Amino acid sequence: MPVRLQITDWDFVSYPAIHLRERPVFLSSVSPHLFGTNGLCYFAARSVILDRYRPEVALSQCLEQARDVLDRLCSDADYRQREFETEFGATWMLGQLPIPVSLLLGSVGAHDEEASCYFLDGQNHAFVSTQPREVDGFCKARGWSKQTSRMTCWLLRAASPPTLPAAELPKTVAQMFAWFRLLGRDAYQRLQTILGKPEYLASSTAMFLIHSPAGWFGFTIKLDQVKRTAYKRRPTRYRQFLHNHGHEVAVSRLAVTEVGSDFVHSRNLSFPSLKDRRITLIGCGAIGGYLAQALAKLGAGSGTKGRLTLIDPDVLAPGNLGRHYLGIDHLYAKKPEALKAALLQQFPALTLIAEPRSVDFAKDLSGDLVINATGEEALSEALNHYHTLLPSRSRPPMLHVWILGNGQCVQALWVDRKKFACYRCLRLPDLERKPRFEPLREPTQTRVLGCNAFTPYAVSAPMSAAALAIDMTAGWLQGDPGPRFRTRFVEAQAVREIKNQNLSPLSGCPACSTTRSG
Image (cartoon, rainbow, N blue to C red):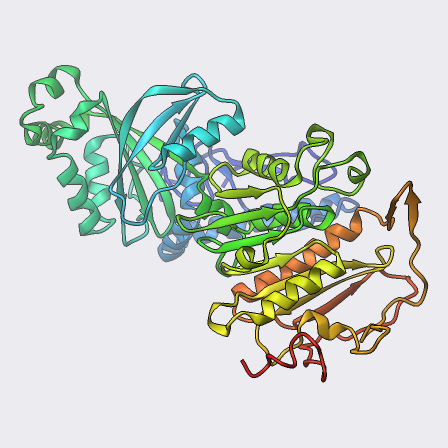
């Protein structure tokens, strides 16, 4: 096959472009790995590192890989179908000209049959969702306007992945009907049912989005103004017109990009997100700021039942700025309210509750998970005390996370069952309250400004503590938060190694020894 090899990057950060000068007759106009311009996708992005110091070897690699891909495309029909399913999204968006219209897909339920399509930012963007609040939040976060008029988008679901068409991606209604039959009987019948109802004739364009095992895709049909008005009371007549003259009626492809909470917070996970979980974060300081953002990215506050409650009585002071997630734009703001505003700017669909106050031990120890990110030992012991008094059936797990010394290490303790240690078990039951484990070999440096003392440490310390807490939360979501007591060290520090472990309760612990039987 004659090809054109185009090298625009001699550093080989990006692969050379390979275009077929002639398309083989035995390859249809739609083929995996081939774009509408006959460009060939032969290496997945960043899958192979080319040797910039041996360009002749790098080019040989590219040509050999391209030849192997083309050989398989030409000789193996099963391979073409499997690759079409795997790369369907790219093929639908780039596989054939014209390039489809882009559409943003927000939150839709698994059983929703229709949604609303809103036009945002002066009709530069179409946004489909079943939740008006999500659309309003999205517009506010992006600074976009929302058009008051909207149209209905019909949702269909196919049990089978799209089949590689014999000639081309559907460009007419007739081709779409024929291709739709291969998606499964239910999807095809659902489409025909919609076309038999008067509602789809209410707009000049009928919009359909389809979810299949290969992902979301869509198309629109431009409706004839005269006929849709004439057939409004007898929509089956228009459906019959589409069947009889479908080869004359064009369809336009829609490229769907998901931006809903389920996609955003679950795309990168191999385990469940925090959707529909009730999470309470006590402490919105250095640790809590980074941790709140990480919890939001993990899905805290998403779903119809989910919420993330942020509790802290303090305001963001100038001294906090060097190691807090928030910046000068929130200076002197109440930390929970400022965090909520910052997170809603990033994830407007979340349910966040800001509580700028001190802890209420009777109220706040509830939900699915309580996280203590205050780093204050006295408050942590009080939280631990009231937590141990709760009956097992109504006691949520509690995660304590803190920074030791000047950031040489961070620690976290997960408290759920009474067979494991509570927070007070980390101190010996003597008058000196000596640590059960002492990782620091050097005394901690403190600084005093007026009546206030603080411990200096770099921003990496609260970031590391937040990461440790998130890792333990992820373990909980996968069924096992252990090891329940963990320590992470900064390299080349004067510290003693401590084993990560499921720590046993301390004999004589004043907090949990008397309640352990419960």
